Figure (cartoon, helix red, strand yellow):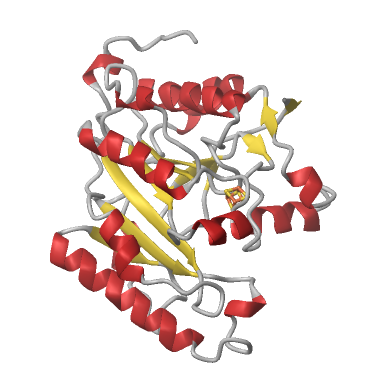
Length: 287
Ligand code: SF4
């Protein structure tokens, strides 16, 4: 796999529900065609040439060295670290990415720092070992459809939906917290589907985040004129579903007419800094 070096790794995120964030890979072989906002930004800044360049991920080879420098400086400020917003931490069929991600989660947990993790890949069962990884990490998958035709068109390199859900359920069955990012949710002119069917598949999770599809002309008001009403209704359906089952939720800002600022704190409220007794006993693990 290609490698790059970076000068820093941990940064304060601008995303409403996140605190600090890490992106330890540049590019992503999932190659989403929603389009991928991260790819658009890297292209605009001249970091990559285009899609073909983006789908060849480059690992940050000095990621662990950087964490050794940055964690002591930032750990009292950090509430939670999110992996990742501009790449995928468990990129499907990319063993080197997955191995590095496990080392990073472990490194953060050793210092009592919680992680929220989001993937369109498959969570390794190893994360259920709470002697090694924190019990308060929160593991999430992106799931916006159950239609494999839609997946092949819009998330060509990502894991099949069924496999994503199965791996997430496995972590849930081991007592870990799980969540769903239902974003960017497509409009019916892109794929006809029943939101209730998707919710039924993932009714075991602890949290759901729902958000509209941006940067895609087919989902815009100019092409799909009922876009606003559609998202208002779907978001309300998610809220009702979550309320009826005691699932926490957040509707991404801009999806409904009125944003709910309180639910934006979904990952940072009532946070316990305690991660895992097993890890606290062995503060200087080597990888
Ligand atoms: S998984 Fe995320 S980072 Fe990767 S291509 Fe898709 S949208 Fe972009």
